[in-house]
Length: 312
Figure 1 (cartoon, rainbow, N blue to C red):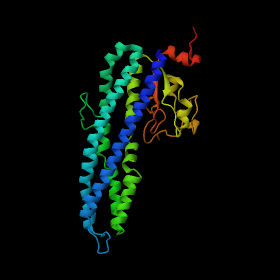
Figure 2: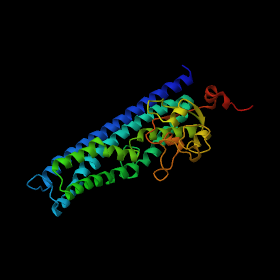
Figure 3: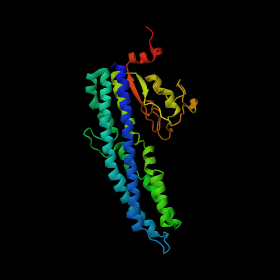
Figure 4: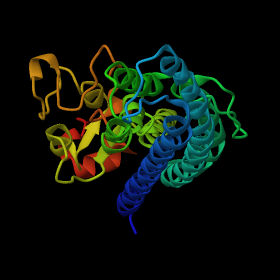
């Protein structure tokens, strides 16, 4: 099997692994949503709220005050239990990504990869507030996600509105189910904080470190396409790019297509500047992009894209 065959084989395996890990993470969030909704119904709505004789919520100071009980439920279900499970899943995922990336880059320099692996893992995990030994330090990106009360505040607002309008308890249950379960309140929040994309981002951060250290300045845009792939990714999928070309992704200077507004470097899925500064090597096709870069040598790049051959 040639090196190029192995590059493609490991690249496909990495794509499958990242998809599996992301699906597992989404399932954990879905389970958390169900637990949160059920606890709010059982432990709060049924026990704490005062009702009128005809089954409607009382618009009373007492009812508004009881929403503080939601803090305990949210703290237990999301900030404690879900955090523990999600961080455990992320750690397990990073270990699997580390193994497959180590195997990939050993194709180019086995000895250097052995020396680099631990340092790269430590550096990137630190950004997430995780120590080399796999302990969560209560800081970094993950800590910000789980200490935020943004989803909780939206739930409280729904309940306050129901109390103010003296809604029927059944109607409030329906509103909460619609928000938490059907509309995926936690899913949206985790998407916006980019936690649902954590495995893909970890992979890209890891491969950037390896490629820079090993002097690999060419990459295949890998991951394939599906029915809802964006034009930006369809345009690039399977193609070879230089690092300089990748750095121009998301800018008017990029000579490749897939843009909704090329003059502004805008494409469907690209993060808004107010939300996040776009990084071509770690963001690729933007929001929830499932693609990754398979970094390769100059020789392989020329084999796949002869126009890159340098003049003698």
